[in-house]
Amino acid sequence: MASKMCQKSSQLPLTFLIPRFCLQFAPRRGIKSISKPRPNRFNRDPNLPLLESTTAAALERKRFTIPLRTGALGTKRGMTAMYDPDGRRFPCTVVQMDRVQVVAHKTRERNGYFAVQVGSGWKHPSNVTRPLLGHFAEHKVSPKRHLVEFRVKDESGLLDIGKIIGASWFLEGQYVDARANSRGMGFAGGMKRHGFSGQPASHGTSLTHRAMGSAGQSQGGGSRVYPGKKMAGRMGGHQVTTQNVKVVRVDDEKGLVVLHGSIPGPDGCSVKLSDAVKKPWPKVPTHLLAAQPATDPVSDTA
Amino acid sequence: MACTKPIHSPLHQWHNIFRALPMLSPLSARPLSTASQTTTPKPRIPPPRLPANISQKVFTPPKKIKTYPPPPSTRNHHPFAIAAINEAHITTLDPTGARTRLFSRSNPDVPRVGDILLATFTTGDPFSGICLNIRRRGPDTAILLRNRLLTVGVEMWIKIYSPKVRSIEVVERAVKRARRARLYYLRKPKHDRGSVEGVVEEYLKRRRLLRSGAVGVREPTASAKNPSAARKGVGAR
Figure (cartoon, helix red, strand yellow):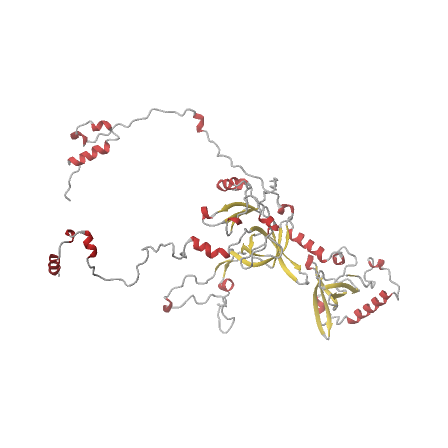
């Protein structure tokens, strides 16, 4: 084989002796691809569709589900009942909004998305860490008990920093999504936690009435328990969302929002309220969205 | 291991020299033969430089961060949220306050368990029966009435503030004050009073006469002292 190659190369003129422009016209041999070459090895082209895994694509996907305006923080105060004009009684939950204020903004340029940081309540400055105190001082807002973020679609949803969000931020008749940490149930068995059926009470069942049962196949399933297998464990205490909760009544003076039905969490828990994603956005009067200065900071630390 | 002693090779001597050059400048002036013999220079003790102001070493507290006062609180000024909502709701449901007054404990003519009550709904349907229980829960205040309709015992919880209830009237007082808060024993066959239709029928007949003015109206003043003295017709509309 090597000798053949040597023979062939000896017959041909040495390539470095041939002028370069002549080489261009020399017939090339080899395997030719039928398909057209890709525009770029890394598939980068202005005409290509947007990649699905980019931040820009993610924002575009979520364009219809990110609220136009920020939500608000409240405290669940308890439940009661009301009568509608037809005389039908319905249960309702009372949420109180206390000193809810815009603390900071998140922007696309700095953070990759638009969001409003909202705080509620008040915390004594001696109980707040210095980094957080600096954060509050930077935005000239009092230290807050709770701090959460609400995503907004674009910069038009960024409410002015320091603006107080009252109960009238929500309109009577509109729908909201209520998020809160559910009641903690502690360590719960499979029947309570996941609704397993358990075992029969009789028919020879012995001492095993509420057990989980089998955790999977034997050798056929790899002789292992699959990840995510539903088992007994800690139940509750995680965030739960109740969607499409109707706002029944709003009392701005007392900071009360009355919601139709129940929402997650025990009384006194912090509740995040935001415009319902699965309903049309509420038609908000312009004075709610307009930039308004915060009310004069009257000292109220009691 | 064919060991080449780096100290004896001339190249490494140069390397040592260059490495030492910036630190020990007088070395560069020495001949190469002696350069390999590393001589440790005496460490230079810097002259004592005391701080200009010794008192600077005293602990200084960290810079105070400015805090801003909170806005006025809604929660501190209105701590009883549920009560406020209930009160506001009752005022809309019962603008005259007649139903609240009728079932308030301060009312001497308050309906008690064991009384025969008559509730009329906005549809015009009446429901009457012996009051077994009065559940006072703000806007959810309700009464439990028991009657017998067509040989079947029937009970109904009636919310007194419900817009579907037009009126609640006391048809007949219990002869004796009940010694229980809930008269569930009336469900037992031994104690069941049966139908109250007869009593209610008589009451309605009497009321029609009273309204037509055929009979003189009795003064209800004595009722506070002796409520069991067959004071009838107390109600709220």
